[in-house]
Amino acid sequence: MKNYYILLLMSLAFLSIKVHAQSRYKTRELSILAKTWGHLKYHHPGIATGKHNWDSILISSIDNILISKKSGQVKTELCRLFKIAGENNATELIAKNMHSISLKNYDNSWIGKSRILSDEQKRLLIFNTEHPYNGLNFYAQADPDNDSTVFTPNEKQYTEMRYPDVNYRLLGLFRFWNVINYYYPYKYAIGKPWHSVLHEMIPIMIKATDTLSYHRALAKMSATINDSHGSVWPSVFTSFTGKYSPPFNFALIDGKAVVNKIVDSSLCSGSNIQVGSVIYAIDGISIKRRISENLAYVPASNYGGKIKTMHAFMLNTFTNASQQSLEWTYLQTPQFTF
Image 1 (cartoon, one colour):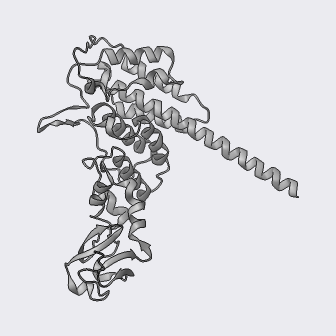
Image 2 (tube, rainbow, N blue to C red; image 1 turned 90 degrees about the horizontal axis):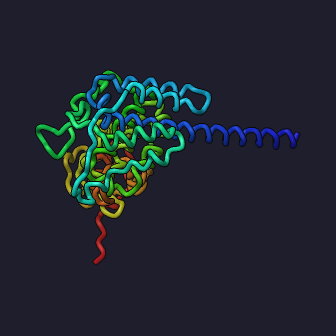
Image 3 (cartoon, rainbow, N blue to C red; image 1 turned 30 degrees about the vertical axis):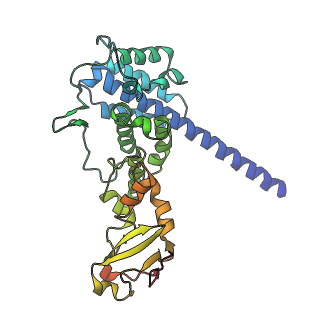
Protein backbone atom coordinates (compact mmCIF):
# COMPACT_ATOMS: atom_id res chain seq x y z
CA MET A 1 0.00 0.00 0.00
CA LYS A 2 2.85 2.36 0.86
CA ASN A 3 4.47 1.74 -2.52
CA TYR A 4 1.12 2.44 -4.19
CA TYR A 5 0.89 5.88 -2.58
CA ILE A 6 4.48 6.67 -3.52
CA LEU A 7 3.75 5.69 -7.13
CA LEU A 8 0.56 7.78 -7.09
CA LEU A 9 2.40 10.83 -5.76
CA MET A 10 5.13 10.42 -8.37
CA SER A 11 2.51 10.17 -11.12
CA LEU A 12 0.73 13.29 -9.90
CA ALA A 13 4.02 15.18 -9.66
CA PHE A 14 4.94 14.15 -13.22
CA LEU A 15 1.50 15.19 -14.47
CA SER A 16 1.83 18.55 -12.72
CA ILE A 17 5.25 19.16 -14.30
CA LYS A 18 3.90 18.19 -17.73
CA VAL A 19 0.88 20.50 -17.42
CA HIS A 20 3.11 23.35 -16.24
CA ALA A 21 5.47 22.83 -19.18
CA GLN A 22 2.55 22.82 -21.62
CA SER A 23 1.20 26.00 -20.05
CA ARG A 24 4.58 27.72 -20.39
CA TYR A 25 4.80 26.70 -24.05
CA LYS A 26 1.27 27.99 -24.71
CA THR A 27 2.35 31.30 -23.19
CA ARG A 28 5.38 31.43 -25.50
CA GLU A 29 3.18 30.62 -28.50
CA LEU A 30 0.64 33.29 -27.61
CA SER A 31 3.42 35.77 -26.92
CA ILE A 32 5.01 35.42 -30.35
CA LEU A 33 1.55 35.53 -31.93
CA ALA A 34 0.83 38.82 -30.11
CA LYS A 35 4.13 40.38 -31.16
CA THR A 36 3.83 39.33 -34.80
CA TRP A 37 0.19 40.43 -34.99
CA GLY A 38 1.09 43.84 -33.53
CA HIS A 39 4.16 44.29 -35.71
CA LEU A 40 2.16 43.67 -38.88
CA LYS A 41 -0.64 45.90 -37.58
CA TYR A 42 1.58 48.94 -37.24
CA HIS A 43 4.13 48.30 -40.01
CA HIS A 44 2.72 46.31 -42.92
CA PRO A 45 0.78 48.29 -45.58
CA GLY A 46 -1.51 45.32 -46.12
CA ILE A 47 -2.71 45.56 -42.52
CA ALA A 48 -2.06 49.15 -41.41
CA THR A 49 -4.62 50.43 -43.92
CA GLY A 50 -7.38 48.56 -42.08
CA LYS A 51 -8.68 46.56 -45.02
CA HIS A 52 -8.76 43.33 -42.98
CA ASN A 53 -10.61 42.61 -39.75
CA TRP A 54 -7.37 42.14 -37.84
CA ASP A 55 -9.14 41.58 -34.51
CA SER A 56 -11.23 38.75 -35.89
CA ILE A 57 -8.19 37.10 -37.43
CA LEU A 58 -6.36 37.25 -34.10
CA ILE A 59 -9.37 35.88 -32.20
CA SER A 60 -9.45 32.89 -34.54
CA SER A 61 -5.73 32.26 -34.09
CA ILE A 62 -5.91 32.52 -30.30
CA ASP A 63 -8.78 30.05 -30.25
CA ASN A 64 -6.92 27.58 -32.46
CA ILE A 65 -3.84 27.74 -30.23
CA LEU A 66 -5.77 27.36 -26.97
CA ILE A 67 -7.82 24.36 -28.10
CA SER A 68 -4.92 22.60 -29.81
CA LYS A 69 -3.64 19.64 -27.81
CA LYS A 70 -0.29 19.65 -29.53
CA SER A 71 2.51 22.19 -29.69
CA GLY A 72 3.29 24.00 -32.89
CA GLN A 73 -0.17 25.28 -33.77
CA VAL A 74 1.20 28.80 -33.59
CA LYS A 75 3.36 28.14 -36.66
CA THR A 76 0.23 27.51 -38.71
CA GLU A 77 -1.33 30.68 -37.35
CA LEU A 78 1.77 32.77 -38.09
CA CYS A 79 1.82 31.53 -41.68
CA ARG A 80 -1.81 32.62 -41.99
CA LEU A 81 -1.03 36.13 -40.68
CA PHE A 82 1.78 36.61 -43.20
CA LYS A 83 -0.35 35.24 -46.03
CA ILE A 84 -3.20 37.63 -45.24
CA ALA A 85 -0.80 40.59 -44.98
CA GLY A 86 0.63 39.83 -48.41
CA GLU A 87 3.63 41.48 -50.02
CA ASN A 88 5.11 44.65 -48.56
CA ASN A 89 5.80 47.23 -51.28
CA ALA A 90 6.57 50.17 -48.98
CA THR A 91 9.71 52.20 -49.55
CA GLU A 92 12.66 51.85 -47.22
CA LEU A 93 12.79 54.11 -44.18
CA ILE A 94 16.23 55.65 -43.82
CA ALA A 95 16.85 57.03 -40.35
CA LYS A 96 19.14 60.06 -40.54
CA ASN A 97 20.66 61.98 -37.66
CA MET A 98 18.30 60.43 -35.14
CA HIS A 99 19.04 61.16 -31.49
CA SER A 100 19.82 58.07 -29.45
CA ILE A 101 16.76 58.60 -27.24
CA SER A 102 14.57 58.28 -30.33
CA LEU A 103 15.76 54.71 -30.72
CA LYS A 104 15.80 53.85 -27.02
CA ASN A 105 12.29 52.42 -27.08
CA TYR A 106 12.53 50.66 -30.40
CA ASP A 107 13.43 47.07 -29.64
CA ASN A 108 12.79 44.34 -32.18
CA SER A 109 15.37 41.95 -30.79
CA TRP A 110 12.58 39.43 -30.15
CA ILE A 111 12.50 38.70 -33.87
CA GLY A 112 16.02 37.33 -34.02
CA LYS A 113 15.77 35.60 -30.63
CA SER A 114 12.56 33.71 -31.37
CA ARG A 115 12.76 29.93 -31.56
CA ILE A 116 9.29 29.72 -33.06
CA LEU A 117 9.56 32.07 -36.04
CA SER A 118 11.04 30.55 -39.19
CA ASP A 119 14.03 32.19 -40.86
CA GLU A 120 11.76 33.44 -43.64
CA GLN A 121 9.30 34.94 -41.16
CA LYS A 122 12.16 36.68 -39.36
CA ARG A 123 13.34 38.09 -42.67
CA LEU A 124 9.86 39.38 -43.47
CA LEU A 125 9.48 41.05 -40.07
CA ILE A 126 12.88 42.73 -40.35
CA PHE A 127 11.93 43.87 -43.86
CA ASN A 128 8.70 45.35 -42.44
CA THR A 129 10.75 47.18 -39.82
CA GLU A 130 12.88 48.75 -42.54
CA HIS A 131 9.92 49.34 -44.89
CA PRO A 132 7.03 50.50 -42.67
CA TYR A 133 3.75 51.79 -44.04
CA ASN A 134 4.12 55.57 -44.33
CA GLY A 135 0.48 56.54 -44.83
CA LEU A 136 -2.22 57.24 -42.25
CA ASN A 137 -2.35 54.19 -40.02
CA PHE A 138 -5.89 52.93 -39.55
CA TYR A 139 -5.18 51.86 -35.97
CA ALA A 140 -2.91 54.57 -34.54
CA GLN A 141 -2.96 58.25 -35.44
CA ALA A 142 -1.98 61.58 -33.96
CA ASP A 143 -4.75 62.82 -31.68
CA PRO A 144 -6.31 65.90 -33.33
CA ASP A 145 -7.01 67.41 -29.90
CA ASN A 146 -3.74 66.47 -28.22
CA ASP A 147 -0.67 65.94 -30.36
CA SER A 148 1.20 64.26 -27.49
CA THR A 149 -1.08 61.22 -27.44
CA VAL A 150 -1.99 58.41 -29.80
CA PHE A 151 -5.50 58.41 -31.22
CA THR A 152 -7.12 55.02 -31.90
CA PRO A 153 -10.47 55.89 -33.50
CA ASN A 154 -10.95 52.59 -35.29
CA GLU A 155 -10.38 50.13 -32.47
CA LYS A 156 -13.68 48.37 -31.82
CA GLN A 157 -14.59 48.58 -28.14
CA TYR A 158 -16.89 45.55 -27.77
CA THR A 159 -18.97 47.38 -25.17
CA GLU A 160 -21.59 44.64 -25.21
CA MET A 161 -19.14 42.30 -23.47
CA ARG A 162 -19.28 43.01 -19.74
CA TYR A 163 -17.17 39.92 -19.19
CA PRO A 164 -15.37 38.87 -22.39
CA ASP A 165 -14.32 35.29 -23.01
CA VAL A 166 -10.65 34.33 -22.94
CA ASN A 167 -10.05 35.11 -26.62
CA TYR A 168 -11.25 38.69 -26.23
CA ARG A 169 -9.45 39.11 -22.92
CA LEU A 170 -6.23 38.23 -24.70
CA LEU A 171 -7.16 40.53 -27.59
CA GLY A 172 -7.38 43.41 -25.10
CA LEU A 173 -4.02 42.48 -23.60
CA PHE A 174 -2.35 42.18 -27.03
CA ARG A 175 -3.73 45.55 -28.11
CA PHE A 176 -2.49 47.17 -24.91
CA TRP A 177 0.95 45.56 -25.06
CA ASN A 178 1.55 46.52 -28.68
CA VAL A 179 0.37 50.12 -28.46
CA ILE A 180 2.69 50.61 -25.48
CA ASN A 181 5.48 48.77 -27.28
CA TYR A 182 5.37 51.04 -30.33
CA TYR A 183 3.96 54.35 -29.08
CA TYR A 184 4.64 54.84 -25.37
CA PRO A 185 7.51 57.36 -25.09
CA TYR A 186 8.64 56.25 -21.63
CA LYS A 187 8.75 52.51 -22.20
CA TYR A 188 12.47 52.52 -21.50
CA ALA A 189 11.76 53.85 -17.98
CA ILE A 190 9.15 51.26 -16.98
CA GLY A 191 11.71 49.40 -14.90
CA LYS A 192 11.51 45.94 -16.45
CA PRO A 193 11.75 44.50 -19.98
CA TRP A 194 8.44 45.09 -21.72
CA HIS A 195 8.59 41.60 -23.26
CA SER A 196 8.48 40.07 -19.78
CA VAL A 197 5.24 41.92 -19.02
CA LEU A 198 3.51 40.11 -21.87
CA HIS A 199 4.70 36.73 -20.57
CA GLU A 200 3.52 37.65 -17.09
CA MET A 201 0.08 38.90 -18.11
CA ILE A 202 -0.96 36.14 -20.55
CA PRO A 203 -1.56 33.48 -17.83
CA ILE A 204 -3.28 36.08 -15.63
CA MET A 205 -5.74 36.95 -18.39
CA ILE A 206 -6.36 33.29 -19.18
CA LYS A 207 -7.08 32.52 -15.51
CA ALA A 208 -9.40 35.52 -15.06
CA THR A 209 -12.45 33.27 -15.07
CA ASP A 210 -14.94 35.68 -13.50
CA THR A 211 -15.67 39.41 -13.53
CA LEU A 212 -13.78 40.13 -10.31
CA SER A 213 -10.58 38.38 -11.39
CA TYR A 214 -10.90 39.99 -14.83
CA HIS A 215 -11.12 43.45 -13.27
CA ARG A 216 -8.07 42.68 -11.15
CA ALA A 217 -6.25 41.55 -14.29
CA LEU A 218 -7.19 44.79 -16.08
CA ALA A 219 -5.98 46.87 -13.15
CA LYS A 220 -2.72 44.95 -12.98
CA MET A 221 -2.25 45.30 -16.73
CA SER A 222 -2.71 49.07 -16.64
CA ALA A 223 -0.30 49.33 -13.71
CA THR A 224 2.53 47.61 -15.59
CA ILE A 225 3.62 50.87 -17.24
CA ASN A 226 4.24 52.44 -13.80
CA ASP A 227 2.63 55.68 -14.91
CA SER A 228 -0.31 57.36 -13.18
CA HIS A 229 -1.59 58.53 -16.58
CA GLY A 230 -2.58 54.98 -17.42
CA SER A 231 -5.38 53.46 -15.38
CA VAL A 232 -8.80 51.86 -15.43
CA TRP A 233 -10.06 53.94 -12.53
CA PRO A 234 -12.66 54.07 -11.03
CA SER A 235 -15.20 51.44 -12.11
CA VAL A 236 -12.75 48.55 -12.26
CA PHE A 237 -11.12 49.35 -8.92
CA THR A 238 -14.39 49.68 -7.05
CA SER A 239 -15.45 46.20 -8.14
CA PHE A 240 -12.86 44.73 -5.78
CA THR A 241 -12.43 47.54 -3.24
CA GLY A 242 -16.04 48.67 -2.85
CA LYS A 243 -17.49 51.99 -3.98
CA TYR A 244 -18.52 53.47 -0.63
CA SER A 245 -16.03 55.80 1.04
CA PRO A 246 -16.00 56.45 4.83
CA PRO A 247 -17.84 59.45 6.36
CA PHE A 248 -14.56 61.20 7.11
CA ASN A 249 -11.45 62.42 5.33
CA PHE A 250 -8.08 60.97 6.19
CA ALA A 251 -4.41 60.95 5.30
CA LEU A 252 -2.33 57.81 4.79
CA ILE A 253 0.77 58.13 6.95
CA ASP A 254 3.26 55.33 7.67
CA GLY A 255 0.77 52.59 6.93
CA LYS A 256 -2.03 54.13 8.99
CA ALA A 257 -5.06 56.30 8.21
CA VAL A 258 -5.19 59.53 10.22
CA VAL A 259 -8.63 61.18 10.34
CA ASN A 260 -8.36 64.89 9.51
CA LYS A 261 -11.99 65.87 8.88
CA ILE A 262 -15.41 64.51 9.80
CA VAL A 263 -17.75 64.67 6.80
CA ASP A 264 -20.86 63.24 8.48
CA SER A 265 -20.75 63.19 12.29
CA SER A 266 -23.96 61.16 12.60
CA LEU A 267 -22.38 58.27 10.73
CA CYS A 268 -19.23 58.44 12.86
CA SER A 269 -20.98 58.56 16.23
CA GLY A 270 -21.42 54.81 16.49
CA SER A 271 -17.70 54.15 16.22
CA ASN A 272 -16.73 57.33 18.08
CA ILE A 273 -14.18 58.22 15.40
CA GLN A 274 -13.12 61.86 15.50
CA VAL A 275 -10.49 64.17 14.07
CA GLY A 276 -7.10 62.85 15.13
CA SER A 277 -8.12 59.19 15.34
CA VAL A 278 -5.41 56.93 13.93
CA ILE A 279 -6.89 53.90 12.15
CA TYR A 280 -4.73 50.79 12.05
CA ALA A 281 -7.18 48.22 10.69
CA ILE A 282 -10.70 47.60 9.43
CA ASP A 283 -12.41 44.33 10.34
CA GLY A 284 -9.08 42.92 11.43
CA ILE A 285 -7.30 43.74 8.17
CA SER A 286 -4.50 46.21 8.75
CA ILE A 287 -4.11 49.30 6.59
CA LYS A 288 -0.54 48.16 5.85
CA ARG A 289 -1.88 44.89 4.48
CA ARG A 290 -4.49 46.70 2.40
CA ILE A 291 -1.75 48.87 0.92
CA SER A 292 0.50 45.90 0.23
CA GLU A 293 -2.26 43.88 -1.44
CA ASN A 294 -3.20 46.74 -3.79
CA LEU A 295 0.22 48.04 -4.83
CA ALA A 296 0.34 45.83 -7.94
CA TYR A 297 -2.95 47.27 -9.18
CA VAL A 298 -2.09 50.97 -8.91
CA PRO A 299 -0.29 52.70 -11.80
CA ALA A 300 2.30 55.22 -10.63
CA SER A 301 6.00 55.85 -11.17
CA ASN A 302 6.95 55.53 -7.49
CA TYR A 303 5.67 54.37 -4.11
CA GLY A 304 4.50 57.84 -3.10
CA GLY A 305 2.46 58.12 -6.28
CA LYS A 306 0.85 54.75 -5.62
CA ILE A 307 -0.11 55.81 -2.10
CA LYS A 308 -1.57 59.06 -3.43
CA THR A 309 -3.75 57.18 -5.92
CA MET A 310 -4.61 54.45 -3.43
CA HIS A 311 -5.94 57.03 -0.98
CA ALA A 312 -9.11 57.36 -3.06
CA PHE A 313 -10.24 53.80 -2.29
CA MET A 314 -8.12 52.55 0.62
CA LEU A 315 -10.97 52.67 3.18
CA ASN A 316 -13.75 51.89 0.73
CA THR A 317 -16.36 49.25 1.55
CA PHE A 318 -19.13 47.41 -0.26
CA THR A 319 -21.91 48.87 1.91
CA ASN A 320 -22.74 52.52 2.48
CA ALA A 321 -21.93 54.15 5.80
CA SER A 322 -25.51 54.04 7.12
CA GLN A 323 -25.54 50.24 6.81
CA GLN A 324 -22.00 49.51 7.99
CA SER A 325 -21.13 47.52 11.08
CA LEU A 326 -17.37 47.66 10.66
CA GLU A 327 -14.81 47.07 13.34
CA TRP A 328 -12.35 49.97 13.31
CA THR A 329 -9.07 49.47 15.14
CA TYR A 330 -7.79 52.91 16.05
CA LEU A 331 -6.22 55.22 18.63
CA GLN A 332 -8.73 57.74 19.92
CA THR A 333 -6.16 60.44 20.66
CA PRO A 334 -3.30 61.08 18.26
CA GLN A 335 0.16 60.44 19.62
CA PHE A 336 3.04 62.61 18.54
CA THR A 337 6.75 62.11 19.12
CA PHE A 338 8.92 65.21 19.08
